[in-house]
Length: 320
Length: 320
Image (cartoon, rainbow over all chains, first blue to last red; front, side):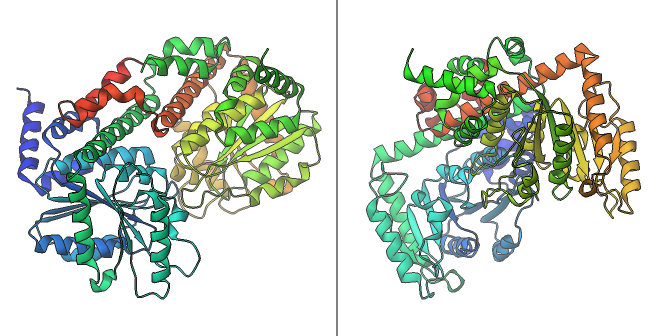
């Protein structure tokens, strides 16, 4: 056995045992986009598939972090081990992660049944999606009962990340305006459970009504699911409505488990998505690497304008 | 001949004649990502290759639009026809184009030897790169002598767009701080001609010196080019230094033309880049379209975790 393979086995065993420091180190390497972790990810994928992956998304300021903190508390009291992966928006201008929110989760910092990790990307959003998928591969090979993945609900890439989740909780705040925020953010369709947080706000009831109407109209991305998404009111800072939310999430999982066909659809949708995510990322790296020897035969006719690049690409894709 | 092919020929002829309204309409369709324009783009690519493509980039606020306005004036006085393609940063949060800058170019609005177009993307930056490449394909099939492409120098995607340009002008403003802005923006390496705008600023000389030192150290992306990038001081709002800049750009083109090998390298680098750009975009569309029948055989073993998705992707890419 080579040294590399031996190190890999040691890491794999540590992760399967639930070693949090090994996990944190590996996630850092994933975030950096290190190629060398791929064999390990391959082994972890084959070993894994543990844990319920739950997505939490919603517009900025809706109170996602507070609500997640409440959910962690509720699951911990039931003896469940919880991992949280928070995907921060990656601004091409600052490259910065919004770390302030993370502070609200400090109360769980000393609990070794909880793992919280924030991920951001300084470069490609595409790279972030791949990194998030890789991170979930790691977490799902570990003994976590619940794996929460949090995104700010903006943009196609973040919606895509939610496709890893078996159950998606979509968070709303009541607005003074006429429109549900998630409609603006383009994420209204992806919820399995809707939450109106800050439900003491005068507009909360109207927001709930609007959400129920939308759900009734069936404007959801997942029409394949025979599940009526509930709308739940919470006040995360007081813990109000959290028990009900936990029950609703459990209900959604129970509903999925009762329908093997639906569970199957989620699994293959996710596999398809994961393959696409990795394909996009690998191709991107290949194209950016400068090592474009594989393109070589195609360059000449495009330079001479005998052939156009669209034709060359169509020929390539037909071989995929 | 079908109606579609006839329409295509009419459009092609109008563009080759220099019809600006046809061009504007086609660019709108390109921006929308209409698939139906691809056959036309293929024909335009084969017909095209006219015009010198010059890139202008630099950090926000460096005065790119004012300088471009001066350049347009200088070229027009020499009787050249000029097209400008301005690529605006696409924020995933607002999706908005910064249109204010465009107003400074209004003085050229009534001149039919000038065409100015601003492009922004509400979605993918990747899609914007493809759209910019398509727009250049259109402009290069038209009788423009000079085609300027402007980007705000932030992010990999914008740097990539500059790979279409035969000559890249990198704009700087003097800073009070210690660091050249373009270093921060990660675009220092791509310049063929460096411009320090607002050269009446007390720090202008120091910025020039820093740039010259960097150039001397040879920290450039294009070491293949045997060209010493000049550093030029301008005050765009007064037109100071513009004639010198025009001469420097001409000098860079003359240098390239004197070295057929260098011209060849630019052409094949650009073809390679263009193929990659389209490949990435087509694959992205395929993956997002939901029509993923082509993946079907790969899904099952990934769902059952017999195979990991990295292995599936490696198999696919080996067929490319």
